[in-house]
Picture (cartoon, rainbow, N blue to C red):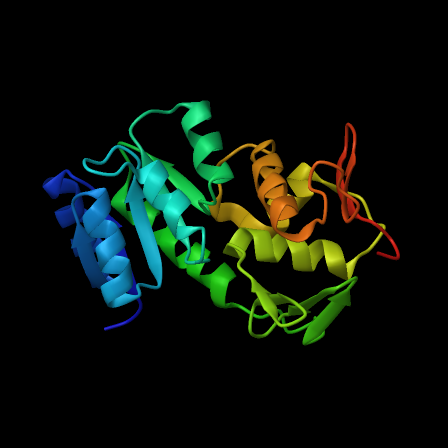
Length: 229
């Protein structure tokens, strides 16, 4: 079997359908039906990606995501039962990499899984192996960011944003350009969601996230990496 996918949803019918479609594409599937079981499964099986429902018994999907993001950059696709902007924004701010609104097309979900895994694993062939920026080392091939001897855990989208901005210091990127570059056609969201990812990234790399000196907001346009940082 291929990559291990953890599917977390308290609706058994949904987990059965998603499992069937994922297994058709040679994924190995693990299932969990509540938040605590999801956390236990992550420790036991070390999945390559998690499909995580927000509304779970025991521990909510929001809390599961928050706990995992303390020490893990594992890709997470959130499932939300409502087409609610606030749910999506909260999920992204907690570190989710993508979201799918119920009811969803299982084929589309599998496509999202593949897209997120490609972003997580793919090393860009036209980039240097490492980028050195201020006190950070961005290892493109290993997809690692370090400060001295300390690893900085980033989600796949946060890593892609950082390496893209760091490759072009001083260049201003619109929100839509950033989304197009890191998400491609698989993403059906709206450009303001990039703000949530930038906010999370700043918390992890900026000495003073409230007064960012690395990733600068260009009001009315988007973001840039400070030249000479």
